[in-house]
Amino acid sequence: MSDACKVLYLENSTIRYHIIRKRIRAFKSAGKWWLNFDDVEAFSKWNSSSSQVVKPNSVKG
Figure 1 (cartoon, helix red, strand yellow):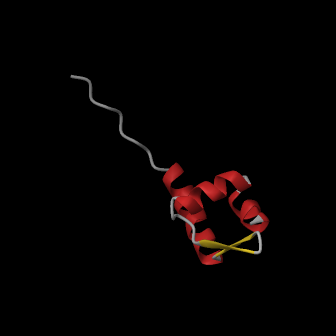
Figure 2 (cartoon, helix red, strand yellow):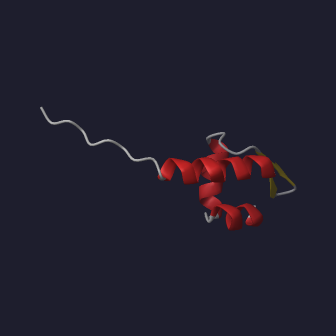
């Protein structure tokens, strides 16, 4: 999990949150989390692209 923290610039608790939400595939064995590296990379790309989306201003009526 520490490698995923470095790639995503997130804390352990935040990564566990995304695992619970099924955004990153992982499993726990002998008290250690194992993450799918492809999912970590895909989540990183999704996270960076979603933060760059410009949201249109709401129309006041």
